[in-house]
Amino acid sequence: MTAKLTIVDCTLPLLDGGDRRHAVTVEGERIARVVPMAELGSAPGEVLDAAGRSLLPSFTDAHVHLVESGIELARCDLSSSRSRAHALELIDDYCRRMPDEPWVVGRGWSLDHFADTATMLVELDRLTGERPAYLSNKDGHSAWVNSAALRRAGITARTPDPDGGRIERDASGAPSGLLHEGAMLLVAELIPPLDEETRFAGLLAGQQRFFSLGITGWQEAIVGDFVPTTDVERSYRRAIDSGALLGQVTGNLWLRRTDPAGALDELIARRAAFAGDERFRASGVKIMYDGVCETLTGAVSVPYLDPSGQHGASAEPNRGITFFDPAELAPVVVELDRAGFDLHAHVIGDRATDEVLAMIEAAQRQNPARDRRHQLAHLQLLNPGLISRMADAGVIANVQPYWAQADAQMVEMTLPFLDASLHDHHYAFRSLELAGVPLAFGSDWPVTTPSPFDWIHVAVNRSYPGDSTEPFLPHEALSRDSALRAATSGAAHAVRQDELRGRIEPGLLADLVLLDAELREVPDAELHAVQADTTLARGAVVFERG
Image (tube, rainbow, N blue to C red; front, side, top):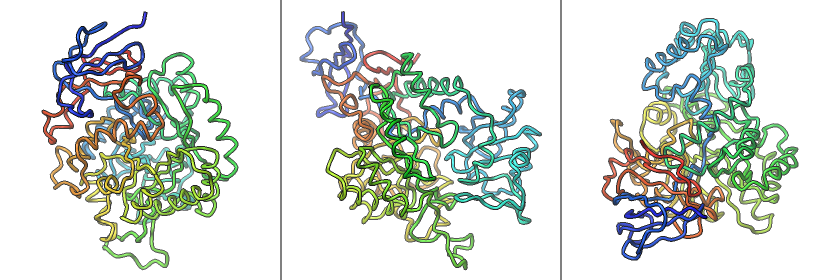
């Protein structure tokens, strides 16, 4: 007999008349009925009394590294560090608790806490001793390593910067313990390989964290051998086969940076290997195109400034980097589009967006029309022309709204090095919406918080509690309803889950989250405090707050 559950006396903020009390009946895995309380009659099955609290379609995270994040929870986790001193305390605590680990590996420190890099190497050496250490920062584009790791990698003052990377050096040219972008791999490739048990445990830990936040669908941003924590195909296969995967997942297959044209047949085969599994669809291809602005590697249209505020005297001013030659990548984009893949491109700088968007536009001109869900992810710097082109091409803006605040990383490490002409073009969410560009929210966890109400808070307020600064470009704020839709139906659409979930409608999967509050009674300034009380995935309760 099909199990039934009726959630009574709930408000549905994303429906017309969302302030009215409703009842939602679930039969098996799906929503069977949505009615005002006055029309309910008897409540079939088990009853969950919402007592006026809000019910939403469960959230979708459109850009996350979930397995990696779950793994990092068990490593030297610095994501909670509030300062340089706090990060050092966390490292010291981990080293004392885990004396038998051969490496100290972790993630989550903030670049703005380490603007002074002069003592980073000696500070880490003091805590880690002869154990090699590799600690990536919160955005994953830089790594802090100790002397033992530098020795193992053979990195000295004579080591040249690798293509697409930079070794931070002191005044004498000696490595200072900080590696950026491609230089990170010089040490990362020496870390003992992850075993499959660790990856699988990370998947389960990440999934449970998501359920506690009301998230039951997500897009794994990288599936492939970019770094060991992204090589997760076997982990998802095991979770599917064992019944442990309870969420709905879309995977982006990694496009290698060397000979990308030769990767097409492999990508098609890997997609086909998951074709029969409804819970995991490998429908996207991830293109990591440029770096990030805070390390001056995001690809920008106007050169970065030097510490004196000038463009510098170099014959080749720094306009950031791209990890692909556009001439080599452009025909690959055409073939990927022709093969039916959704492209998911990391673009931070406006130059990166311009170049990748041009490739997508060319692919659409050359290939037959179809239901495309191409996405440009992050989109830190835009301009009206780029936004208009995205709207015309139907490209989805896959954005990380928590970044749209004037935090120290923005104020101290980004704005001083960007030309003034770019300052007013950060995270242009409202401009994208007004132009008709579809919005999808994601966290990029473990880069930043996986909590949807943290994202929504910043999208609406353009600041976060504790910030001492004014709201960041407040004209680009979204309404509350727009932010909620970008985190639910908009994200579900971007990752091709909208035919299954993302709205509260009869026939869709009962992926639902009952909140601990009635949203319309929560001021904008308190949105970050809203929590999931009960989370359902396919009609089953997967989280209840104790």
